[in-house]
Image 1: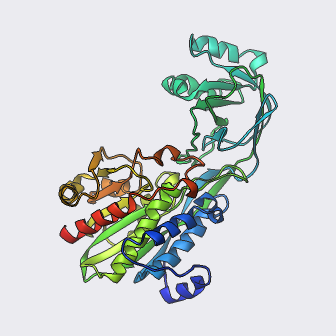
Image 2: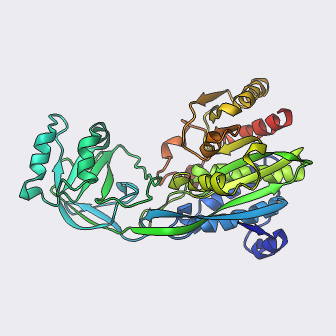
Image 3: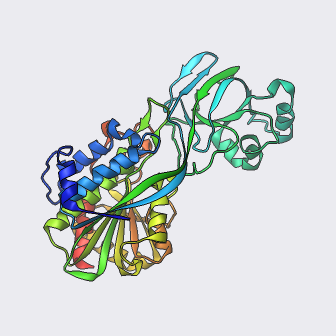
Length: 424
């Protein structure tokens, strides 16, 4: 882990990063960070074109400008499947648009050629008949087409089609209602056959598809977490603020997933919180961790807790994980660790008094974001994720971009966190 000299870093990045005012609840600055991280410069903050690491370098500069007393760049490696090259698909000669009409399952290999289509009869489903059909010479090297949820309900059957060697088919197309999503969380290895997600209006009686899709598997790919410290008056305990700054990256050369809500929104929030506490010295040390590798199955946060936390986990008074707050649901969704429940009761009282949100909706703890590795290790923590607003429909789609960005949750969340820390 590299500890960085703030003065040198500031000089290096001064020419690249414009000056901004750093005030509490600085909505204009918050929007500026979201817009920057969502821009084409970072290509969806993924791995194929180095977008995640470019974003991490940008954030080091922003934390330095915010007034952080110390900075670290915590390096780790992952294995990850990517799609940086050709991404073409047509059905009976009609071209489809990547990210809109089709996307790839994250573990898929590349594929090239023209293939027959076999449609699963979901109304009169007979697994034995389906496998008998697929064994016929005319369906050798075909693509099997089926509704995603139907194949999910019959997972054991369809796993043989896309994951096994029993069937001689070339791959599978799973249909899904628009907007199409792209899940990359488990692309740590490449499976034997490609799985393509297509919209539910995929032709019901097409004969062939033609595809030219390239993948690249990155082995021991280097990423880094960005860690900033704002020094408090006491050093025996600390607060920690986390957000992941990586996202899904590219689907071919021309399409990228900007990730304005997921999670430029949360990343921007912890930068502005760092700026606030740098100007308003806190009682306890404050640590701000921008994780990479979250969309590769929480790899950055797992590395942090397992290998090299900059402060013992036992000294964390409370951890706030801010993920996908770029939305407008007046009821704030959250997940809380067992050790965080006492603090959550205080948070509810504060919200009842000050009406930052209409309410807080606490759900069961899940392994869906970077608070989870800390929760498993008995750290008091909470996830804030604003669900079911206008922006939530764009989760993991090409429409989660600056043009669809929503900012309603930022200010009430900032105030709720600040008020909680003052009273906890």
